[in-house]
Amino acid sequence: RVVMNGHTFWLEPALDDATRIRGLGGRESIPADEGMLFVFPRPMQLSFVMRDCLTDIDIAFLDPAGRVVAVHEMKTEPPQRPDESAQDYELRLKQYPSRYASQIVVEVAPGTLRRLNVKPGDLVQLDAEGLKKRVR
Image 1 (cartoon, rainbow, N blue to C red):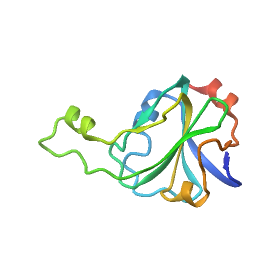
Image 2: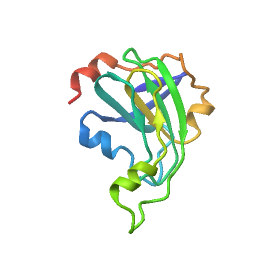
Image 3: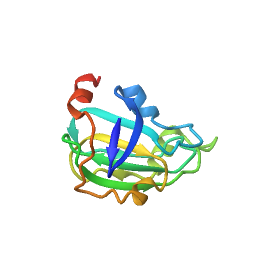
Image 4: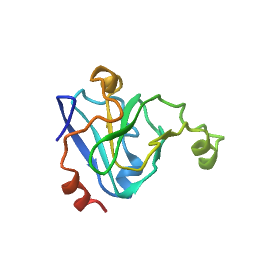
């Protein structure tokens, strides 16, 4: 359970490398009150891409205490072409950076963060300490 600017979300946790890499890739839509919550072992500057994503995604990078440090509206990318190597595909994907050290990342349906006026400095309500204990 995560609360952003008064709105409650039920987010799927991504607590290990395999789940974090897969993310929301392959999904055609994200329900309005759902999404994914990525938790990393330690705070660091992060960068996400839209690998194998079939829908736009809003993303908020949070510091270890749950304060927003960056938000982006990530746009769907063309899929990997048959003649394109995995490395070339990865290199052409737009990078969405955290800008500052981040340990928790929220991904929700497109347009959500703008609608809720989520911006850097906002505090997101979540059990950050409990989530960090479960990360692998």
